[in-house]
Image (tube, rainbow, N blue to C red):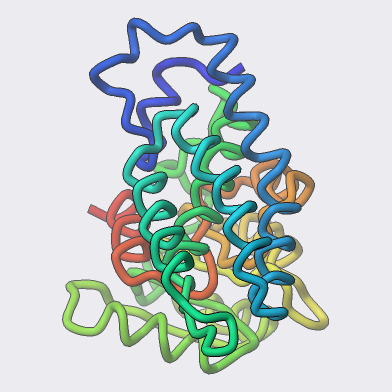
Length: 255
């Protein structure tokens, strides 16, 4: 069961003013209902959008809106309601609606809830490192993704920020880079050929680099989130990127 302290750390939930009034067991059941249903509902939305079926899409979004209201994610529920209003005004033959930001936010909430469910108090102490950093050049962030388009987008979001970012396109390239460098934060794609993000995270830790790991993902299924957290992930950034979300997640790890 997610504790009240952990609930307050989930940014999409607006519960700070009512936390003492919440029936924790019942509220956790509502959270579990959301994460258990979201992937199916997401697939149903994709199918309805592809078929330009406004009626089916509206029905799915009503369910999502009501679940968001139940868990006090009211800003997201209001966003869903705005799209419901749009859907009621468009002609299916001229169907043209971009829900990228909304879906990214819903996806992120699903992952944040799963992270809170799996989080334990025995977190690794990232301040203590067995690696002698004396001769290694430091970057703020090492980002690893086999798709250059995502790396370009990631760097573009951070352009003008205080962060020094290095990007490589494979796990082996990352390990080679870490022979002469280290990082304050690792941002790793999960689905990569030859060496996926899970294996790379293990190898980075084995090499003595104890900086926190954030995974880039388009996956919100429980097994993926749990496996990542078992390896030591501290957070997730959802693809396609939402600039504000990317910056907020990184700022939490690098002050």
